[in-house]
Length: 309
View 1 (tube, one colour):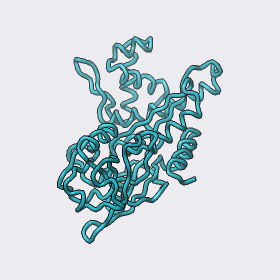
View 2: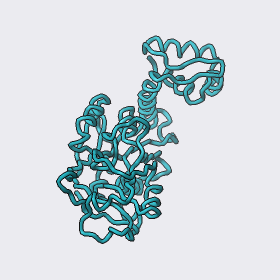
View 3: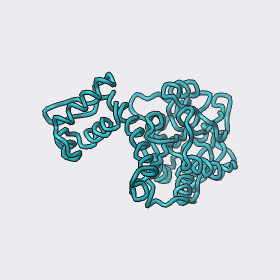
């Protein structure tokens, strides 16, 4: 398995065609096809599915190419720093974070980016579903992931992390808060119980068809809510909270700079049937990995954002 073969495979995946990839690489299609077949033989998998309309990446190929892209990126970084033309290279260094929908995670990312020159770096902030956070870090698409564990979902999350060779490092422990807009009928209550909320819709982030409540982003996801409205992004959820007097259950760690001053977090009031729960928010990364300077700065900003230096 050579770096040249990896380069060829990445070009084929990017172009979706042997012909177009060969043109981009300035080699013949037969040379490219031979190199890909030899790579697949050595890897013991089919990386591409060949059809009359071109090529597509197989599930095995997707996993392989995620690792291959990371390996080739590191090779290019070596060339950039130590190669013959390293001083003149224009290749940008990459850093990505995948997170559940936390405004503090986005705030920390913005502060991290401010400390570097975006002209020279390729940054990515991915607010996404819980399983995608795990998948992104597991495949090294993102270096870090931000998510939470609780007594309810802990065993399942730990199993998924182990399967993806990931470690979880705690950042902060929280109790449940009810998050709603400032003019909600319950906004001025000192505490809010589920009984008080029964007439209002609970806003949840959609996790995909058939996905269990173990992957929900909202604490106390094991409780059955009579009224639920699902959405995909934070902006939509905030708008619906205003329009429908909706609410969600969260950590209480909110970036007003990003979410605005129209919203507030009120402590959740437990009762005999609906107990409060501990929410352990942390970051995930590849086991035994050495964090990049970007990751270190990002985590420093996260700790500032959550008030834990």
